[in-house]
Length: 198
Ligand SMILES: [Zn+2]
Image (cartoon, rainbow, N blue to C red):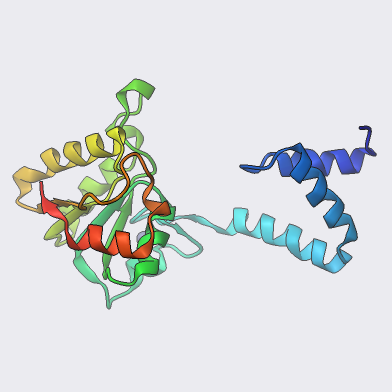
């Protein structure tokens, strides 16, 4: 079907989002046309602001609007424990559970030799710097239960072991091959509680 250019541009923009095909994109585009202009402007501004004002925390790598992030700045949190995750979304999932009071370190990926991703390509060097500078007692390796996630946990554990810092791995019970962010809060809480020494 031939649409006026502004509409086809809007449809193309929606199609850049994950899980949105041409049909949904078309529906969303026409919905936008029916919205009040103020609402559309607010929506557009929210998109741009989120992109412009959010950055990664220079300490932990979590997504934030202030640097260091709220979690790193929170003096009530236990700075002796760092939970290592692959993605900012994992921090959000773990925070929802409210059981964990330590800090985080977001790797932004996992080691995957097949894809040419080594430890230097993810936030491993910054983790090692933190372990030198901060009084860390335990490192909880909460990378995803996938081959890459397991390999990354093993790699970090081996690297850290000589320093005497305790490294633990979150328990199974998480779906193998699944992402941490999709686990429900009870499963996540149990996985954290049942973590074992590496
Ligand atoms: Zn932070």
